[in-house]
Structures are given as C-alpha cells and as structure tokens.
Amino acid sequence: MKATLTTLHDIKGARNALPSVVRRTPILPLAPESCDIGHEKLFLKAECLQVTGAYKVRAAFNVIRCLSEVERKRGIVLASSGNFAQAFAFAGAQLGVSVVVVMLDQTSSNKVLATQELGAEVVFCGRDALNRQPTVEAIAGDRGITSIDTWEYPPVIAGHGSIGLEIIEDAPEVEQILVPVSSGGVAAGIATAVKLSSPRIRIIGVQPEGANAYFLSRKAGKPVTLNRWDTIADGLSARFPGAYPFHHLQEYLDDVVLVSEKDIAASFRSLLYRGKLLVEPAGAVAAAAFFSGKVDQDRTTVAAVTGGNVTAETVQTLLSL
Image 1 (spheres, one colour):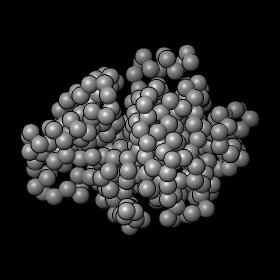
Image 2: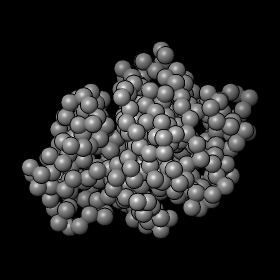
Image 3: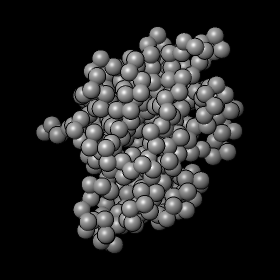
C-alpha cells in the first residue's frame, strides 16, 4: 500500500515551530580553484555550523513537538550513530524530556561523550546496526517509555525538510541540490520540500560506494539490506533505507550517485582548506559528488554539508587518504 507522504504544509509547520536556538545556517560559495573565485558553481549549506554540530536538531525538536504530554512525561528512547543522539539530548534538555540513546559499540567517543554531557543516557547494543532498533523497543517495553523509530516517524522528514525551504529561499538561482543518503530521512525531507516548491531543481542523492543501500534499493524498486557495510563515513551507517523515506525518495529524488573513500577524503580536504569548514566524513559526501565530477558541474549547485562532529583520529585518516 502506498504511504501517505509528508506534505509541504507539514514541512512549513515544522519550520515555523522551530525555536530560535536552531540556526538558519549560511549558504557559502566554494571555488575549487582560485580561478573560480567570483563565479562559483558550488555552494555549501553549512549545517556543520548548526547547534550540536549537525542538521538533526531540526527534526529532534519537531518530533518532540508532535508527542503527546503523556509521551513527553514518560521520556523517549531512540537509536543513533551520534548526531541524532546529540540533537535529541539537546532538544530534550531544552524541553524537559528525558532521553535514552542506543548506540553501536564503535560509535565515535566524542559523539558519545557529547551526548552524555547534554544529559542523555547512552546504552550500547554491540557492533551490528541491525541490533539498534530491537534494543530501542526492548528498553521502551522494560521502562515504559516512548520509543522513537527515527527512520519511520513522519515528523522526522518534516523537520529535515526545513533545510530544503531555506536553500530555495536563500539561493533562488540553485539548479541542483546534493544531499547524502543513509536511512534516507534528510534526503527525503529536502527533496520533498524542494520538489513541492520548485520542481525544476534537480535533487541528487549521494552515497559512499561501501554504504550504497539506497542505490541498490532504487534499482530493485524496494528496500534491500546490505550484507557488508564499509566506509569512513560513519554517520551514514544504514544497511538499508527506511521504508517511509524510501517512498519519498522514489517520488522526489532525481538520481543517486556513488563516491569512493578517496573522493570523500578529497572533499574533506577541499572543504577544510578552501571552504574553511571542518566537517565529518558524512558531511563531506554530498560535495564529493561535485568535486569528483559524478554530477553536472555546470549547474549552480548546493551541497548539504550535514555535520561537523569529527575526531582528531578521523581527521588524520582523511588527510592521509
């Protein structure tokens, strides 16, 4: 049965309800070479400058806004590779809602610590991403709190969609938008907001070659699960796309392309040295498609730089790749 898709009304409602602490992040030009300065084709939606260092705080506030008073009082539990953890921890602290986050054992230590410092409890579930949501449901049942499946909860896509509205308002000349894809939420939100507002704009999803679940699912016409996941972009940890985002991506995404680990590292360096932005690997993935020529470089393009929470060890790896 076809899903009821998120509407432009839903996205505008989510955007209008965001508290003032959520930043309207800038769109910055980036010239790959000095000769490109002044007539740039690539622009960066710098969500790495967002509060908590990533875009997900938008959806976290919208999710909590949509809960009942009873659900808020119970507290919530969800799974995250790190950035949603910090977003919900921050939003929960602001709104007086207790938060438990299920994480993989190999989650970046700085993301774990940041989540705990913001007041959330962290529970580890092993090394297999497929264990995360079952652990969430088990904790919810044991403690009587509200479980949130961030892959399938409609207010998530509506919250993410606020990024798309800002892009088309602040960069009306944009012809192409690049966005990373993991479970699919942020790509679905941006694509929905943009296509329902300005269908002429191309929306391209970008995935690492070793984390290409949506790429394969798009070809299959249904969500499929990866047997093996391998990329430095730990923020794109989904081994299969969410069913609800998948419907939106099939409806509104124009294409999806893959980038290599070397492409991601090269993008990281360009964003650091030329863009003056320190980003995490997942945050460099969308721009990597432009730098590597996987998309049309003649189109005026905005790449979503989705996060900046990166360890010193990962920085050294990216500088050496």
